[in-house]
Length: 352
Ligand SMILES: C[S@@+](CC[C@H](N)C(=O)[O-])C[C@H]1O[C@@H](n2cnc3c(N)ncnc32)[C@H](O)[C@@H]1O
Image (cartoon, rainbow, N blue to C red; front, side, top):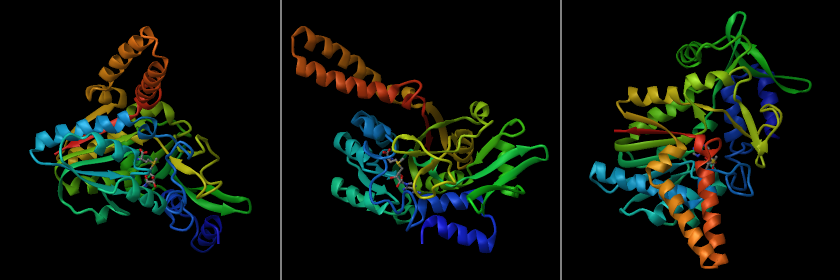
């Protein structure tokens, strides 16, 4: 039975379900979920979205420098855990360039991706679940474009105040239906939604908060690095009229999230203010960067300057092949730093 049919059957017996339960099924159902059931890897050039480590190995190399700095700070050789490791591009380039000894883990929900990870990164332990990672450990956890997929509730500001949007069904398919706001959702909205106008939609990222609390609890000393699209609660406010929930398929915005469960990525901008609060609440020291600034701090802009100079030298020397190679590398790095693209991602660093 298809995931859509199973969801319809469930709703027919139980009634409407909270949006986060729908999203959990659509992304993580073992038989029909977009990630868990995928037979291919979603985050590669031919896949559904292109992430920073797929654009350039300069991203993993920069994180390798971050890991080395952390190793120095904590005074031990760090454990590196990547959660949602995808095709392994980040971990591969990190391990290829890191200048301190590390022990690596890759956590990945997709069995197809785990197979690729095991082949591509034989020195890493590849596991399906966070619970499989030996903890507590001293080191660095990295999650790039993971938190935006963690299941979330949806609320809408109405003339009666906040209401939730749950998932029901009619003859045509799945539909959003009105539901009262649950107390934990109301508490999250009070703290992180801001002054949303009537009609405005907010994605309540309670599971992301729980995830970060759990991850921080696994790190005895070291850092958790969360990289994703999103912003502070305040800066997200102008995006609230329609909300930020969306789907991706084959590098383009996809259909409505309810239309083809299991066939599209469902995602929303990450509310980093909520994550900063969780990290501070767990006693961590927190930095919130833009990706372009974070990478610049790790030397990526210096590499760009050096590439420009070498490109010029190659042009003067008439070495066209070398000039093209250098230009291609420069273009990749410029993509990572693009102020309205990947450079506009946020990087939360929580240290303890
Ligand atoms: C957008 S891709 C990013 C992959 C990789 N981090 C990168 O930057 O290229 C998200 C990856 O996280 C995996 N994933 C999603 N939710 C997960 C979870 N809760 N635990 C572990 N892996 C997860 C997906 O299967 C997918 O491979």
